[in-house]
Image (cartoon, rainbow, N blue to C red; front, side, top):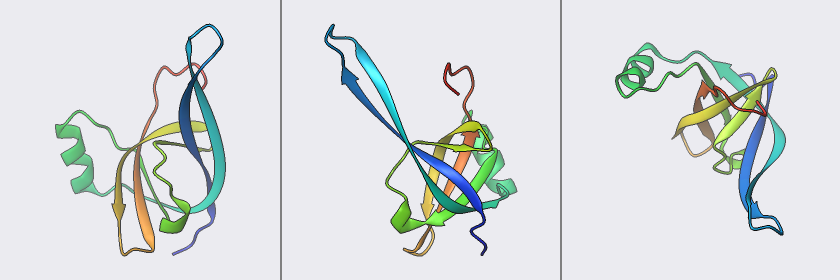
Length: 103
């Protein structure tokens, strides 16, 4: 397995400003990943529930901290499913984020 793709894992936190408005703050950190194709069975199972998986990345489990979004080649993706393969590797199944102001 070659970890030659660079992805940015995005942590999203919310905070309040001095006016009491809720503000979303994103923090990105880069990790190496192995880009893989979404399995056909995964694609059809997800489509049955209204999800549209586009990409799958494998990262080292120690580098994944439960992030819900990632960025790859300038496009933001939502992580719709994770799978711990063997305690050392985690699969991240992603779908593109649509209509985000900062994507």
